[in-house]
Image 1 (cartoon, rainbow, N blue to C red):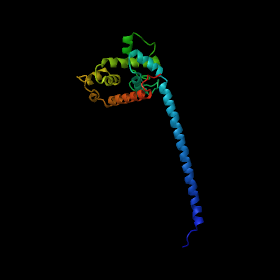
Image 2 (cartoon, rainbow, N blue to C red):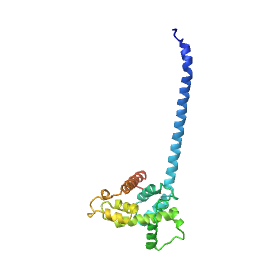
Image 3 (cartoon, rainbow, N blue to C red):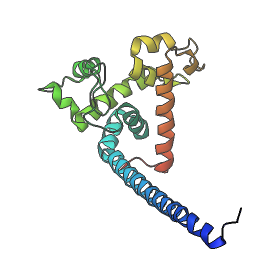
Image 4 (tube, helix red, strand yellow):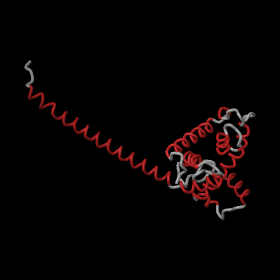
Amino acid sequence: MSLWKREEVQEVLRPNVITAERLFAAFLVGLLVLVLWAVRRDRREAKREKAFDGIIAEASIRHHVSPFLVKAVIRKESSFNPQARGAAGEIGLMQITDGAIKEWEKHTGRRAPAAGMFFDPRLNIEVGTWYLGRGLQRWRGYRDCEVLALAQYNAGPTHARRWAPDDPREKALDRIRFPMTRDYIGKVLEYRLIYERDFDGRAPE
């Protein structure tokens, strides 16, 4: 059997080489598109997160709550979507509940003409921060004050009281029986640390 000439072999392989080159070029184009998309997405998300910094700062000052904690709660609750709706009827940026709204109205004497107004970022953050502040005051003096306040915000005061240690010096997180609530608290505290680092100790502007 005669051997193929080198030129003939190269001629047969040439289309595959071209195809491989085209595939690699297409891969690079696709990779570039993904990178550009990711950059734009990150910019949009960063802009969306900063959109409420002024409102957060004002509410935090009024209710003596860390703005970083409030912002972390918003990130976990709604991902900064003012129109977010929860499965149990929670609404807005801080996913406030009917119970939190009624409690806020009772203690402040204020009432909104329509329930839909609580989707407004300023009013929603005001109520949510007030409610979070109430939890922090309730558990002040406990080693895990923020953990219990977040447990109350997520699962309600009854469960928070059940999970609170008899000795305020003891840890509270391990006593929480709901895995979703433990995960919620862990995420919020993680986000808080991120915001504190990113803002270098300064409140959001």
